[in-house]
Structure formats: structure tokens, C-alpha cells
Image (cartoon, rainbow, N blue to C red; front, side):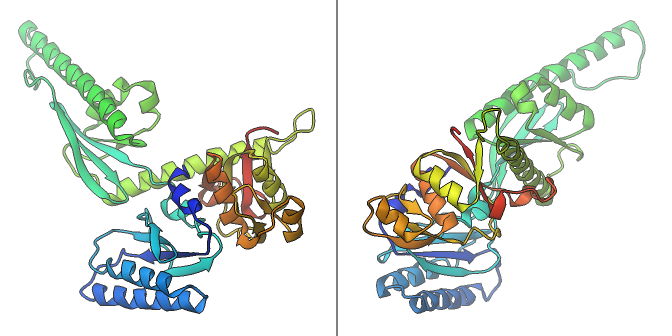
Length: 371
């Protein structure tokens, strides 16, 4: 997950209200239920010590979602009565929640908004293809391509002239497959899609797949549906979930390999809160790996005003010359430091099973820029 969009959160010192709300349910009573949720979460923040202006801003922002048709949910990050950031979620949260703390509680975003692959679905036939862009926030048309229209159909005759005609049909099919592959590559480049799903008859899908550039063949999957059929949301979701899981597995394998010391005793990965705090202070984190339910995620650390001012103990910050310090969750503090130094972050929860439960100690780890 690219953390650059979080930068506005770190331009202000806390405390912060962080709210996660589910908007996936849609019934006749939804507006009233969401109003009650807004009131309840604002009251919860008040009980945690939030100021009146912030509680009011949260309540009003959530009230504005009463009639929203958003498919998953939204996060709100509110400071001093102002909604600073309100990203939509790619997946609904397990429950509505509100947090009041020195830092914005951004760690849940890794699972709820972090990996949200976008998929171009290509409905292919012998004449060309129609493209859709599919993601967690819905579907939209993404263009089409039309190739040669004649000749298109084979005959059953076996005389020379008919065989010549059938060869022309084959050439038309191949020409149209090449045009479709070219248009699909252009669509992927324009949209920045992470995945391609090819829908159509076996031969047509395979012909287009084989004509894609090598980099796109690696992210293309063939969906076994009939010509012109609509790829179901469930099918797209399975493709997207598999992409998320495989990426997490690759990064976790990189971590497991990098944490083994080299011949000089240096490791390219770190795990555990003390080692990660040291790496964050030295700007050595390349990618932060977090298992949200890991025991170290909510471990207390101490932070100063700047992202690289963090320590395991409060006295350590004073030794470093920081006079002001606040308690924070380890995951949120490390995400702030990672965002400030251009590092990425990833939830490794989907990959834990594939590695036999091997994850960073305590659920927190990092690939390092240098040992």
C-alpha cells in the first residue's frame, strides 16, 4: 500500500478521532440506522475524551452518509473539529468503531483499503471485445474494439475455393485477436488496472491471451464463461482476492528470506517492536509488514512531534532530545514513520496460512533499505 495519501494526517499534531463505518447494508431503515450510528459513535468519542467540536464534526459527517449507496464503508480522520481525510473502503469493517488517540488509527486501512486491485474485464468474440473496469467501488464501461467483420464464419465444404475461404476466416480471427490484445494493453495502461479477466469462448480467450505483451500475460486470467456472458461479481471478487493473497505471499516470502543473516551477519529484514523502532528512526524501512491481529500491533510505544521520533520507552525520547512525548499504538506509530520516508505497508494476514503460520514476530516486521 502506497502511504502517500496519508500525508495530510501527519501535518497536524494530535489528538485524532478515527472512525470506521460500514455502509454495505441497504434497506428501507438504513437512513435511520445510520443516524443512530452517527449519534452512538460521537457519544463514544465523547466518552474517550474527544472535544465537542470533533464529536460534532464526526456526527455531521456520518449523518451525510445516511443516504449513501457506497458498497463498503468509509473511514473518517478528524482533528480539532475538521474532517481531514475520509477515504472510501474497499471492504466493509467488521464493526463500526471510533478511536481517540494521539495518532490517527490508520492500521485498519491496510486490510480495509490497502490492497484494492482493479480489474479490466474483456468480453471477447471474433469481432472484437468490450471492456469493463471492475473494482470494489463498482463497475464502469472502459471502451471497446471492433476488428474486421468479413469473412467471419467457416463452411463445411472441402473444395479448394472453400479451403481458401476458411483460411481467410482464420486470418480474420487472428487479426481481430491481435487488435483486441493491443486495445486491451492500451486500456490497462490508461486505467492502471492490476488484473485482466478474459471472457469468451476458449479459442478466442486463448488467442487474445497469447498476443498480449509478456508483462500483461502474467496478470491475465481466463474466465470460463460463454461468449458475451457477464462475468459475475463473485467471479471478479475471487480473482481480486487471489491477487491480494498472492502478493502478500510473495512479500512474506521475501521477508522470511531476508531475515536470515548473510555471511557477514547482516539481515535485510527486522521484526519485533524494538528493532522496528530503531529502523524507523534511521529511515531504513522499505516496506512495513503488519498482521493486524498480531499481539505487538497495539503495543505501547512513545512518539514525539516528528515521525522519526519514536521509542520503546518514554525516557529514550528524552535521551534523544525530545521534550514532548505521547503514548501511541506501535502499528500506527510505525505507519506514520513509514509514510514520512516513502515506505510502503502491507497486511500479511492473507498470507499467513500459505507460509505455515510463519509471520514476523508479534505480527510486525519490515523489509529494510539496508542492513
